[in-house]
Image (tube, rainbow, N blue to C red; front, side, top):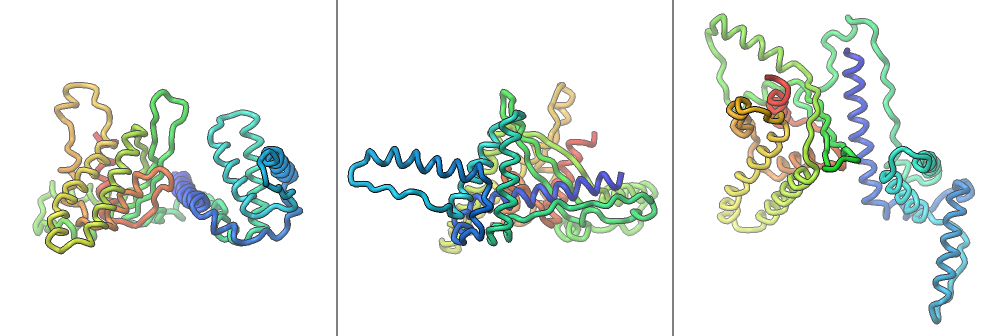
Length: 337
């Protein structure tokens, strides 16, 4: 079981890392193309053929324009290869299982290996090796071994294609509770002379707090996008409010605090299991009341972390004891009756 859990952690971390690299490649492609390719001759032949063919098509079209002299293509630039790679990756995402997808996947692999060897900035930003995990066969060797740090949050959203209604799934892993950080926030006092029942309850809490939680939740794709957009809007308003007078900023922050709490409530509602009976409706949980004492003080950095949790593109991997504690509460709403 330990080996499976360790693999789950390492592979989800790898997904978050590669997703961030892919987003960085898309956003900063213009920076990568400032460097020339070291060996044009090693570009895959099918890519060279397609680029020169596209050049000839452009020549035929532009020749009809008056006073325009077309220059025949003599070489291939790094910008062209990067743009071509990006186009192939985007096209591959639209396909499911078919021969064309297999061909594109092989082509992406060829382009990736070529760029790693012949474009230094690409190698620096997009060179990622999937971690090799050595399984442990002895139970004694893994006893007490930490697979996720306390207070850590690791998650990523995945779209479910081919359904009539867009759905997104979040796979998440939550490290053990950082009890010291939670106690500092809530100010909860220790019981001086606990009864037997209280000691048993404390022991159960300690065991629960030491667990690493693995889970999955689903959300409507449009609702999730709206939650992310509303979170980004709150960040923009808070940044803008920083430029106002202290009095106005303080007044605005009261409204922003309510908005922040509402965003966390909407996140918590995603974890609720579907209500299938009137009895379940009567026992419905108020997710905001459940975590209100754990919500960190309003700050731009805090809202940024919430935005990272609900953003589908990159996923999130961060050490945030309070958000970890909040999500652990939501996890119990989902999985513990």
